[in-house]
Length: 116
Image 1 (cartoon, helix red, strand yellow):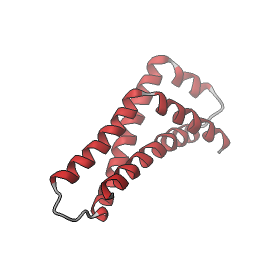
Image 2 (cartoon, helix red, strand yellow; image 1 turned 180 degrees about the vertical axis):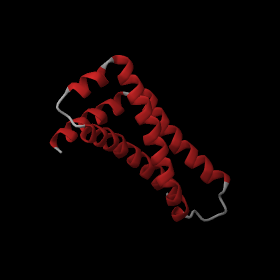
Image 3 (cartoon, helix red, strand yellow; image 1 turned 120 degrees about the vertical axis):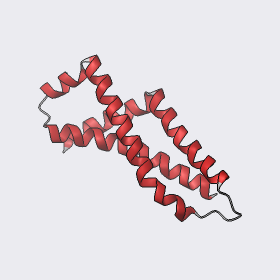
Image 4 (cartoon, rainbow, N blue to C red; image 1 turned 45 degrees about the vertical axis):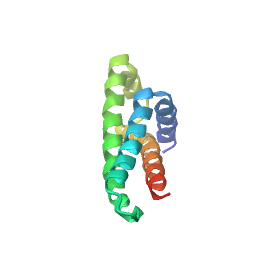
């Protein structure tokens, strides 16, 4: 479990440095705000947007996880990780959790901004 936390920390740092990831989170927030402005009927129902929270987080994590694996495979980082004493479960868990945290935070912030 401790080794997975190392991967989580690595993924969080890389997520904050990656412009494509940050821009995708900003795009999700802008999309939700645009969606809110087109369906505005006088009262904002934040509970209606929580339905979209799980799919948005899932799409963001899936897109970023695939992008991260392709980039690490091209740079040769993935082979180094596979040669380390990490199990595949620890590697996957670390990568998914490392990408899930910022995706969830970005989606929550978007929903809170919509509710204000």
